[in-house]
Figure 1: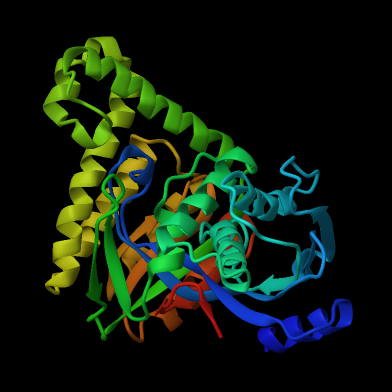
Figure 2 (figure 1 turned 180 degrees about the vertical axis):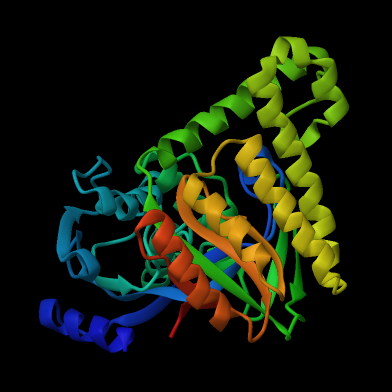
Amino acid sequence: MMIDNVLTAYKKHFTGNPVIIRSPGRVNLIGEHTDYNDGYVMPAAINYFTWFAVSPADTDQVRIVAMDVDDHIEYDVNDISNLSSAWGNYIKGVTSQFIISNIKIGGFNCVFSGNIPPGAGLSSSAALTCGIAFAVNHIFETGLETWKLAKMAQTAEHRYAKVNCGIMDQFANLFSEKGRFSLLDCRSLDYKKENWQAEGLEILLIDTKIKHALASTEYNIRKQQCEMAVNFIRDVFPEVRSLRDVTLDMIGQCGQVLGETLATKATYIVEENNRVESAFDDLKNGRIAAFGEKMVESHSGLRDKYNVSCKELDFLAETVLEYEGVYGARMMGAGFGGCTLNLLEKGVSEHVIEDISDKYRNTFDAEPEFYTISLENGTCIL
């Protein structure tokens, strides 16, 4: 088991009895790129995790061993400068938020490993940052509320990893409950949870195994484009604070000043935001076919208007819909690679997996990866 491996590695490198913390990946059932536009999202934690063995140290030194990349970092907890280690900066970004906030913490020892596929759009980065924030809060008894930990983890990605992410990943990681999905208002941070009652369904993720380097760059560009669109629209409609406040009619009235690119990007966000609210009601009330249709509409918008898809994602999202018992499919995550999310009747996935594997292999000379997921608890102590 992964936990046993982490414990064994901890005992190899450090002494003492560590606490074991489990931090999940996440899916977003619908609502891509709406979170940083103050919109709505529908996330849930899943049954893929990062496990941490962590304990306080007698010094101010932070010593971390990353089993999956066979690497380690060490630094003084009071030093808030960046590291040369890309993965290490996610961790140092978190500990630095405690120091910057004048919250007393010391050094600690940690070993971590996980099975969240990196680059698949399942937010392995939030599992890392939120897991560390949760661990530090626990072992040093700082008493911070969960939302504070989520925002610390988000800030770590902004300032240290240079990814201007919204709050959805951190929310899903820390607030999720087993067998439930959420509707999160990314402006007010209000949320609603509902039980996953679709017992006859399963969620299948299909990983393209494509990890385009431009994903993070284009993510930041899309965020900038949304901010530019808001600035233009606000000149005409001063009440607008973000694309959350914008209507399609407003975009039409501002079309000339926006230009085609910004107008199209803003249109996708407004449409997707509207889809999320109605999709939540669909799933809550068992309207599975209607929810599946909105998944397909979401993918079309991401492909044609927001321009963050790629040929591999499009192939999977379109091909899987040819099978009986598939309700919906769409790309998930920032884009340009990663996974498609597919909603199927139970028992269908075995045939789909076998057939899609052959078709994908013949088309792209590559092997896709498949993950059947369940909805799980957020970060917790084991």
